[in-house]
Structure formats: C-alpha cells, structure tokens
Length: 367
Ligand code: ADP
Ligand code: MG
Image (cartoon, rainbow, N blue to C red):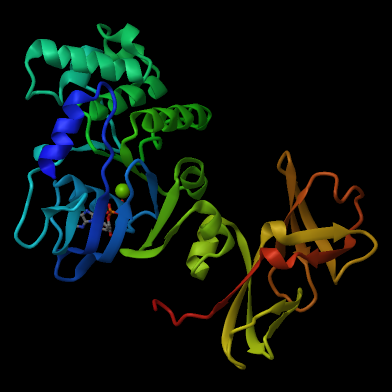
C-alpha cells in the first residue's frame, strides 16, 4: 500500500493521489485528569475537504497533531488508506507519513527567499529537483513570480498561500490545516479561503481544515465534523448539521437561538410562541425548544403571537429585533429582512416558521 502511494506521486506531475485518513477510537490525555479526546472515530475520504469545527479547547489541534505524528494518542489508531500509521504497535514518524501540516501561525522564514521557504520541506531531494518542485508548488498558488523575493513584500493572504505551497510541495496525500485563515483580516479572508479551496480541489489532496467558525466550515467543507469537549458531536454535510443538528449544542453552533423549556404532551411542546411538533418524545419529557432568530414572520396586523418591539438594530440586509412576548421574561430576539416591518409601530404580531424550530430532550448538565 505504502509503495503504491509513493509510486503514484512520482509519476503524476502536480497532482497528488488522494488517500483516506481515518481515526479509530482516538483517546488522548495530557495528564491522568486532563482528557483531551474521548474516543474519536472519523474518516476524511479521498479528495475530500473535511472541516474540523469546534469551540476553543475542544481538541481540534490535538487531533491534527496526532494525525501528523507530532503528538501521540493514549489509545486508538490512525490509518492512511488501510495502513496503520499510529497505533499500539506502530508509529510512523511524521516525515514518513505523506501528511502535510499548515500551522495556525504559518510564519515564513523572513531571511529565506520565498522559493527557499517552499523548498524547506523538500530536504530529501537534490537541490535542483527541490527547486523545480518548489517552483511547481508556487505556480499552483499563483506566486511563482515572487520566487526570489522575500516574504515581507507579500500581503497576509499571499504569505498564507506560500505556507500552503510549502505544505503541498512534497505532494502529501493528506493536507492538514490548523485555523489557516485566523490571522487574516476579514476582508482578505473570503478571497484567500476561496483561492485555497480552488487549490485544494485542483491538487485533489485530501484535506482536513480546522476552524472554530461555523460559516467558514460551511464555505469550505464537503463535510463538517463538529467537536465539543473532546467528543465528536456530529459529522456530515453542512445542510445536515444545520437542518438536523444532533444536539442543542450543534444547533447553537450553527445559528443563534432563543431557548424555551417545555414538557412533551401528546406529541407537542407548548411555548409562549406557540405549539410545536414534538413527535417521538414521551409525555412529560423535559424539552429544549430552540427557535432560530431567522424563524420570525412579522406583521403589523396579524399573526400567531402579540409582541412589543423593545429595540431595533439595523444590520444592513437584516435588522435585529428585541421583542417582549407575553409569558417570556427575557427579550426574544428575531432577525428580519429590512423592510418587512416598515413603520415605527411598537405593537406587532409574530409568527414562527416551524422549520426553524428545533426540539431536543433536555440533557442533564455535562451529560
Ligand atoms: P482546540 O485546538 O480545539 O482549541 P486543543 O487541542 O488545542 O483544542 O486543546 C484541547 C485541550 O487540551 C484544551 O483544554 C487545552 O487546554 C489542552 N492542552 C492543549 N495543549 C496542551 C498541553 N501541551 N498540555 C496540557 N494541556 C494541553
Ligand atoms: Mg487549536
């Protein structure tokens, strides 16, 4: 298997043969009472861009470092295609894994030319061969014209692309990127993200991209794997995580929510915003009813529930409303398109669209 991968890379100019990277029940702890990963089973399919999403401290970087071989799991296995690269009796060193890593802080060496920065990971090659491969990698990211310049002349986005070229130059089967866009300002981010995705597609490398930003994960990932507290919450295409989140945590990660407590009764949950479908929950079950901010239709004349507008904040395409609803202590928040509520009227009606309501059984704290 290993031989196959390497032969394939040699004969194919500029294109990597994609591999599957699999984690099998990965557990990790830095110390006996500091558990980082609690049994992660997950695969990135050949040629796929998998986004590893989760809040800070959820274990994303640790999982990438385990894949790269610069951290060792406490138990479980990592496989590249069917080959074990880290497990109870096997440890393939990082440089032999055919896995490239772009760190969060992708610092380039300021005293090396851009070409030499890219050549850095090609130490196994002769100098002319390394130069040639580094130039190919720079061409792929559209920066070959800067080969002999130094990093300081490049913008943040261009530097990020050099870091990408550096990781891709050895033609890894799998590319791991740890929050690669977090250092870029928000205007640059969009274009650099789109360029990076195009480069990944073209190279056909399997990629795992870490982010803590759900929108970024949706823009980039063929699939998203959501982590929380060292556990895999849910993995699937963006639509699936957004439309059918497995838990309240997953729902809250993808959209802002208003939360109501209710009890299941006859397949329904009654809330101050109306009665919602709760089929499948036993009578009396404690429920969390999550209503997306985008769930609201507003009207001056008719609707399901009376509301008083407490505040309106203009956000460009939409406005954010804070509403007082009878029977609810906290203001209810709604996001509506500009123009839907034209007048300054304070007393209005709201109707909640059922598809933007998500119902979960209430979990015990920390369950
Ligand atoms: P993420 O990348 O999702 O923010 P990390 O994998 O960096 O998460 O960290 C997961 C957990 O492990 C955090 O609670 C973090 O504080 C802890 N941790 C990370 N690195 C170390 C380390 N070298 N020693 C001890 N604990 C660490
Ligand atoms: Mg991290």
